[in-house]
Length: 416
Image (cartoon, rainbow, N blue to C red):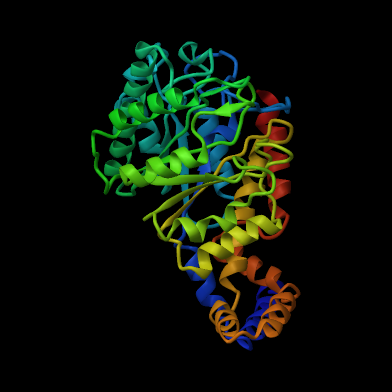
């Protein structure tokens, strides 16, 4: 009853400024958020036990990480019951079900992911996909699709084509379009002499990968840039400008990762500009701390700004929202829960904003009223709307989920 009482008061207050909170709650239930599988096992996957390479680090050694597919599925399903809203699960190629056999990455097939498709069907998830162009003997020198050795390039081209076909299979089987994100770690630790040649090779590789047009109704391809990485501090071949041009040339989506830009750049400012020219975008939402450190997403100003850009522009069908963080220093199920709930929270925060009223004030040049209303909104009873949203999705309200995670840790994770 406490939740309902608080919500009725909040509903009345928001209605006084033209916001229908019931409608906002129902709208949010239609917006999917893609949650990354790799938070559950520190980006290890089930292909081999080699080290992480390609500028990727999952720091920390909190006990209880998933050691196999069954444990990862169990953990994600547990987390999903604590997270409200419509969910997809994003898989990397290294999460294949290979039956204990060694499968080279350029030989992966749809059948290696059929058990994931069955899992998604059973639990009502969509699936997204990612080629894994790191942590492999063919990427040891920091180059993949831009490698001067044609044999290396061909290997990764074949892997990316295979990944696209797997994603199409997922979309076809589930009836929910998959999104495939292409990212490579290619770059130089020190200052290169011929950046152009490396980028020309990268372009040629992608033209070969996307020569096969694919089933657009079942899979959306996106390409992701990065400003720098560990071991690639001086030059990243796949820069923002490179991928923006590539996406435009090939008619594919552009991925914006919140940690892949200079510290003074924000993704929230890029969304409206790019959607004037691109049909769709993919977001990888993380929290960079000094660099692309992939901290768990918190309910901060930039997250709220990203959600506001999506909702204010009516871009929820053009911006595909995915999460990308991996923290091994805390309970991994809690990390999923905190990050995903905060993404949902930011979207709801945007949905209970009187956007049309604010736009009208802005168009009329009444910047005084615009600022005043934006500031007053910060003290409106948003928490009561959030609690009602969680209740309507049958997930714990406020911090009630934490006790469930702690209990699960004591009973399940502690035995691993």
